[in-house]
Every structure is written in C-alpha cells, then in structure tokens.
Image (cartoon, rainbow, N blue to C red; front, top):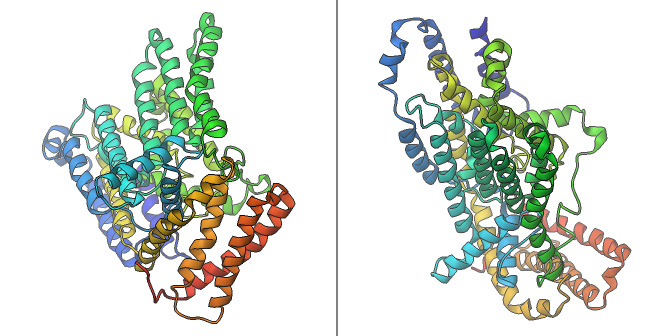
Length: 538
C-alpha cells in the first residue's frame, strides 16, 4: 500500500496536463511532459519490482553512483548554459528599468524592502560599466545569482559531507526554488543564500546547550542581516522568539532578551534611519512594503483561489521534498518523531512555519507566475529538512530515486523553457535602456534641485511618462498614436508642475492625477501589446 502512495505525484502530473487551463507551473509543452512521465512511471515500476532483489544491495549499488560534488559541478554548468530570461517570471523589465534608472540618477538603487540586495546589484552594474562592460543590470543580476548558486550548492555539499555517494544533492536540485540561481534577475537570490547560512548555523550550534549564547546571538545577527537583504526575513522573528523561549536558560532569559534586542537594533536601525532621513535622496515612501504591507484580504484567506495559489507555489518550489517529508510523517511515524525531535530539525521546522505564514498572508500583487519567487521562501528550509532526512537514512531509499529524478528533470525542463527570450521584450528592453540614458542626461539637474524626499517619487513618475512617449513614438502608426503621445506630454507637464508648486502635497489632488494617469498608462500598455516597434532608435 505504501508503494502505491509513490504513484500519486505521477497521477497528479498526468491530470494537470489535461486541465482546461494549463497550469503556470508546467511551462513546457504537453508532449514533453508525457514522454518524461511515461519514462519515469516505467522506471518507478521496475525499481519497485526489483526492490528486494540483490541488485540494489547497498555496497554493490553505491559504487556506480557519482559523488554529490560531481553532480553539483555538472549542474552548475547546466545553470550557466540555461539562464532564466523569461521576463514574465519575477518583476521582469520593471525591476531592470528601476534599477538602471536609479543607478544612473542617484548612483545606486535602494529601497527599505531590500536595502542590500538592490544596492549590491546597482553597485556591481557601476563597477562593470567602469571596466567597459555594457551598462546593463541583467549582467550584475546574473553574476550575483550565480554566486548565490555556488554558495547554496557548497552549503548543501558541506551539510552532507559525511555521505558523498547517496544522491542527497538531488533533493536540492529537485526544488524549483533552485532556479533563483540560474542567472535570475530578482532581489531574492542573495537573501536566500543568507537564509541557508542561518540553517547551517543553527544545525551546527543548536544540538548542545553549552552553545546557547552563540546560538541566540549568532541567529539574531544573521536574521538582522538577512532583513537588510530583504524584509521578508522579518518573518524569522517568529524563529527568534521560539529560540528565546526554548533555548535560552531561565537564568539567562532577561540577559539574552536585552542583548539580542540591542544586537538586532544596532544592525538594522542605522540603515533604516539613514535612508529614511539623512540620505539624499531619501527612500520613496510611496513604494515600500514596510509602510504599505500588502496583506491578503481576510475574507479571501479561506477560498478556492487562495488555496490553489498556495498549492501551485508549493508544487513549483518544493514538490519532491514536501511529498517526501509528508510520506515519512504519515507512514514512518516512529522514525519521523525521532528525526523531528532533534533540536536542529525542530528549529528548521519553525523557520518553515514562519515562511509558510508569509506565503499565506502576503498578497501576490503581480499574480502568478510572476510572484512565484516572493511567495515561496519556505522552499529552502523544507529542502534542508528533506536533505537531512535523506542523509540520515542508514540505507539508500532506492524506491524514491525515480520520483527524485523525475522532479530534477522537471526543474531542468523548466529552466530550458524559461531560458528562451521573447524578441519583442528584448527589443523593448534595449529601447528602454536608451530612454533611461537620454532621460538621465536631460533631467538629472532638475531632479537634483528637488527636495530630497521628492526626488525618487518624481523621477519614477516622470520617467514613466517619458518612456511612454519615447516608445510610443517608435511604434508603427495606429489611430490613437498621436493623441496618446500628447497625453503623455500633458501628464508629464502636470506631474512636474505638481512638484514645483507643491500641489501634490494634497493627497486628494495627487490621487485624482494618478487615477487619470493610470488610465493613460493602460492605453499605452495595450498599444504596446497590439502594435509592433517599426522605428527602433537604438
């Protein structure tokens, strides 16, 4: 009966392929998945038929397996060969545009949501430009994504260093979250590497009470630093509270609370105060999630659409690991209880809960697949748990290998599919880069004359209208073309006057303007979708 449970993922994939609407988490074509599915169902059946035969005896079987470091090395080459270039996944062109615009206008991009991620990507773009590389944030995002990939692969290899030929590295490679390290252009790559550092740290220092000081202070410091990379790490405060309650000795509780609070404060407070008050320009308060947290509407917490979204992200990010752990919890209760009672495993489970809470509460404003990365931070702690469980097995769980290889293959197929570029998107990006250069040259002096709290908000809005006019002018002729260009010019004039004469200090007048401008921007996006670029000024 237990072995029949292993066929559920195959059955689910088969059903998903024939749904009326193709699920976003299956980006390739149906026939490809059917071939893959057929092969691995056959392989799974063969393995289960011969599972008790001598062919899978540990010593004989293991000598034919490649070591984990060899698999990881090959996979890194695969990551380099198939960088993620589909701009519908993640923030896409908008992220690249904002990063390059702020880099050229202000020296680097920064936002309270992801201070270090945005600054490091911007600064690397500037450094590469100094050495005559193309001034394109795609390059800096790719480099830092691959660096994060090297760190994550190395972290897992270190975690499983005692068993080199157990295929445990495939647990990592079966998780869709690993696609963050495929040269992916988003601000979630470096923070993910910092999260892994936390899991390695607590795995090392949580198993002996004599390390309680190191565990609490080190965890606080790593969580605070990870919050500087991305505010989603704030959910790890749940882990810190749990750590303080259960791992701080009674006689040290007050001391640990005071020191940890002070330590987290001195790491975080100066950065947020500096960019909120002193830096020129200050942070754009209108676009930070810290001030405007996008929580999911309470009335939709328990709804079919919300559950479907959560399950889809789970499947995409961590299908094998979550299914593997579910199986252990349900069918191997004694072994599971022994495993999860270990302090390091229990703490990783708490961090999983913290990020699942984020995945439940946060409102994915871009929808899916665009927000797959933001909504699935729990993929890494779940993967670490599954990796540790696999690594702790006294005998290689041969019956799981076909399903594990299936999930690794699905991730690789997704990478190959998402490495394909859309020529139209690429052309728009090249024109946008040209527009950013032109805009920064023409408007930098005016922007510098504005109050420091207005500079970023003004520049974003002003460039939006400038870009709309600039790109619309290069489209093939269509009926509304001239009127749309004129609307962009009028909006830009009114936007500038609103800041010059301080009329936008009135929220009511600002909202009226933004409502009207949004309608024009929707028309621009529709025209860009419906018409080709016939006069590219590259």
